[in-house]
Length: 373
Image 1 (tube, helix red, strand yellow):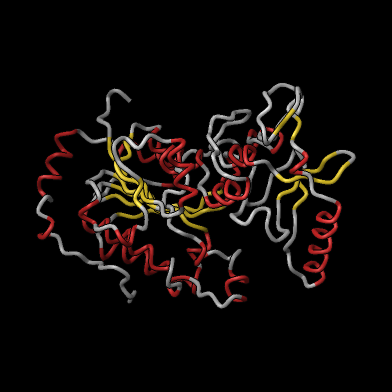
Image 2 (cartoon, rainbow, N blue to C red; image 1 turned 180 degrees about the horizontal axis):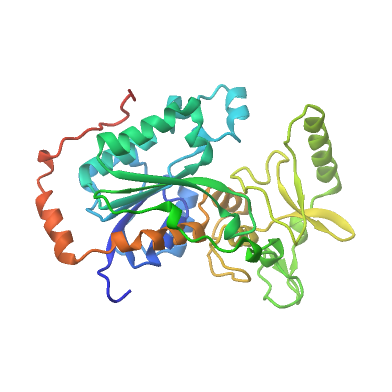
């Protein structure tokens, strides 16, 4: 991209950096990161240079003026309050959903606060597909009104299934906004051929000696998957009983026993908890769980047969982090599609920043935790 001027971006609710990877590939430079989870911070720091900026914690405690000016805002804001998958447990434990969730529901408005103050050229937001239909569509209408009518961005959105890029059914809504009208069209995004899409065997450990052993995930000359990932007899029996109980009630909960030539259901942050799991069949013994390295490949942080992404945390934390992440190749595809309208001349950027440097002239539409109308 030598013919383009590099652009800057900020990475909010960064997790382990899935959004960042996609935008660095088109020449972006990250100038600010916010992630409150200390274990996700550890993985993020192990894989990305901070380039002079430390990871900020709770975004609600960071004033807008302390965030550097930037061309693009990236945010995969917390999806739990809007997730259909987590709704039964939220009801069971008395937790509220959507904007009524006091700890996470209003975090979208933190994004609006920063957009309002800095007026970046563009943004990309990501969330679960249920965001579009949550609360009979009222949540979605508030989000679109905030971004379009209140903030004046030209907004496009699309629900994309990661199945085209990785062997996983994972539908997410992506929201793109530009400060100026660009003609950006999600409909013009070229999807990979589904007939050539990867299957699970492309991301599983081959266990034939063609890759080096990576303890604690694999071991021995042939890099066999460690026995720690094979279900014990007691646990395997428990999983089967758990699924049968739900099946008798007409529910779809339970494990999914996947074939190497097939694809996986959505990897969740609760993987290895509660019996709803992606399991891999094994000849002559009980099924096994995915290793964190296989999860890294399933989410596109590593390509097929790669083991480059650093995983400095426990299995439990790694499963949680990958389950919460975005699928990297999907973000890469969107970033490349946005690129023609992101890359601007340095003179244009400097001119815009000079015009908007006196922040008191721009009305702050959103204070912390506003009440939606």
